[in-house]
Image 1: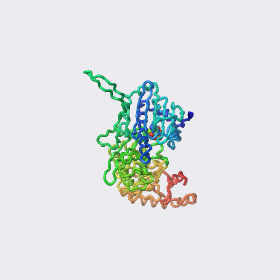
Image 2: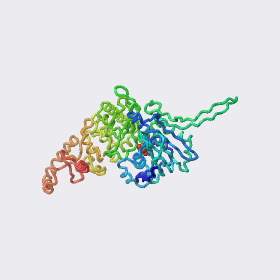
Image 3: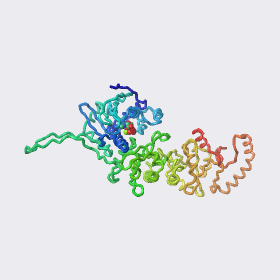
Image 4: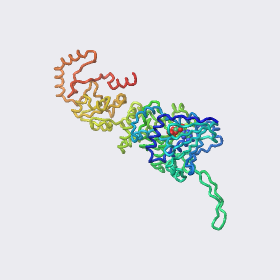
Length: 567
Ligand code: ADP
Ligand code: MG
């Protein structure tokens, strides 16, 4: 027989385990949701592969998850006949966190458990949640189409063992050896309750064994035959999104979100729609409450789960959402795409385009409604995802106006760092005679707020948008107009306040300009080639001088942005 190897967990896995056990002590039962969710994913993956390789089923095509408890041994077993795992897959799935940027993220944890467990939430709980209730976990798995099986075993303390074993049938068995204090879970009745609560929407049947009823005698002495024991499905096992909206509760939508998104928090909002007509599809789209730590990672996977006629086809189909909506989670079930659809086919496809258009406007509508009716939720959304939404005006010409209305800014109206001013509000508050929307871009909020360029605006009581996010300069280069008003940077050299300057002031300004001409010349000579020009200005009221950029030059923020990407 092959020998047993001992391997180490990735450092981050150890940290994750620690934090998870600490933060989920009041919600331990979710381990079952996570393991059933994985088994259901494994069934989905096998069903998809079997579309092209029918022999993978090997006579066992009824995919299901079975749960059983053994009170004496104090164990729970979750067993599926899904896709299973190869040796390499076991090592990468159950010994590491396969997300780029993970190590960096963990380095930034504070060490304060309660704070860190908030941050860790976005990882999803997943397989490791088994250790919340178990002090020894055994995984026995055989990949569909392979003959060799493997056993993985760990106490969740830094290392695990791996060895070849004999296993009848493909799929994965997970055996939880419960901690003494978690004995209560080794109970059929308890487990049933948990499955109904968390996994009713799982489309794979979840079964538990109904014990045999022995032969008995009726009242008048006749024999009642024994009823043999059997595996019985205890969940509804219909795909949630195929059900009617009216019969679905918020709770069901939320649980389903956790299954598709691997998030452990509730979603902020969702939209469930059946579209009929030229293209037919169902979409169930969710907006998360928290941005993932790797939202800015270029290699990050995003996108929707794709089903074709209720058969799972792929995860992370990114073709159905524009990039500025890459935080959206959920699924699509198309009736028009072929079952053998590939990422390449999706790339350039009329159906894809139609669905993408539909989904984009669903999300925009959902956000518009939230902004209007649930301002607090919208602020949560904006604080998490606003920076991504700011890519919208450049990326989505067709929805530019709607996206612009969804943008939120800091402004001199409140001088608060919270971005909560919309362009519509700004326009409504504009002064008489004002025909432009003014803004300033700086590196930080503080320097935007204290920009010397603001002096004249504050004096005249003109509101200015204060921008300091990394994407702002770039966004503004695509956002030149809103509601027929030009957007105007107040740091541009040729700033003209137009009608906002009255005649008298203008005359006085011209005179002082003449008086100062000599001084300007002297400064010009002193600075020489370091500057392009020295100009007299009326825009400063307290500061003696400031640096501005020429209309055709890059602004200082943009220069820094270019430098930061190595240009
Ligand atoms: P996630 O489900 O978010 O990918 P998990 O921690 O729940 O993360 O699971 C990690 C990985 O382990 C899964 O992506 C899958 O590849 C593998 N895995 C877990 N359970 C099973 C199972 N029952 N059958 C096959 N693969 C599994
Ligand atoms: Mg999982």
